Length: 445
Image 1 (cartoon, helix red, strand yellow):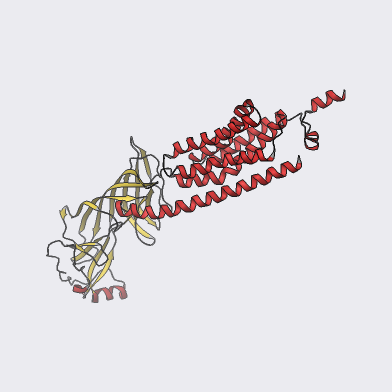
Image 2 (tube, one colour; image 1 turned 180 degrees about the vertical axis):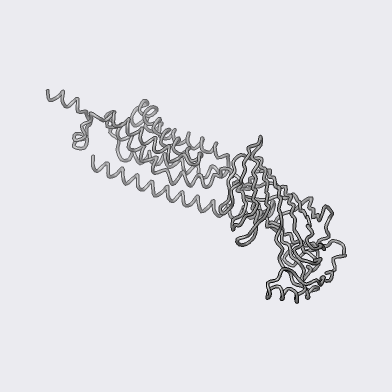
């Protein structure tokens, strides 16, 4: 008996190594495919959006700017900067930005935004490329900002807007200053810039809107470092329920569930933070990572199954040879091998059902010939459905695998303890037969 147990253990270890190899192979194949297809989806649909807040600069004569830095005075002298030549038609091609080559006498001094009111809505659309699912979305962006001229003289304010990503399309784009279409030029870094002349203390309102498409996530960035934000409101509407906030982002101050999804609001009067506002799109179940996880978990299922079959053999007086365990392990392995490659061609749930039926059929049909129909269909069949099919299916339900295995292990322990309470284990491991403590007492009397 001891030699047979050692042989079964070796079979179990060899099968476990095969499962580890299958899991690694599936994982590598999935990673390479995902990297290739993710780039292709980004080129066709658009990449992740990271929308920076607009920037505002005052065009200040360099002499006044140097005095401002040295003396720490607020604003320039009464001298009004010359007009930087914005009386031209809007152009996005080949135009130079103000305050650069044709405005060498002016420096740009940052001016903080007085308020921000941003509204963004998402329409999630999972798309399949090859054999993988990707979280694509349509986004409707509308932002309004106010800025106050802090200088005691009229100043030219440069409004700079940067797109969230160059790898996207922007439809129905608008750039308004005080409700009127702004004349914009393309900056040296690909941004759009508009200029407005503001009187001392005058408030300038401007807004930007567009419709675009993105992938995986969306972020609104206050700045590249710790930034102070005043009178900030961002309203986000989704058409999906499963929301997840990206790392290093701020949680919303208000959450309202709607008929289709959520209405999320970020409201801050005076915020200082290095974090941003962001949202991760919900992901659909991809078969590649799922097949890898199930393969890595397979040794646990086989361990339970072998142990139950061994105990049932003792209770039923069934003498299974290590070669029988070898074929049972091969039948278990067939489930994971078939599933890993079948998901490349059919729906993941259908692939799971087909693989389960094939593996169960192999085990039941084999044990029906080796032992009996009852042992094959009832004891072994139910054990395989529990430890292979059910345990594997818990990977479809993220977060429940560990709990299911724990509950299954406890129930298995309870049933086997009750069933084997009177088994004479000395006789089992000391001889080829099996019996119970009760029968031994009867024979002694």
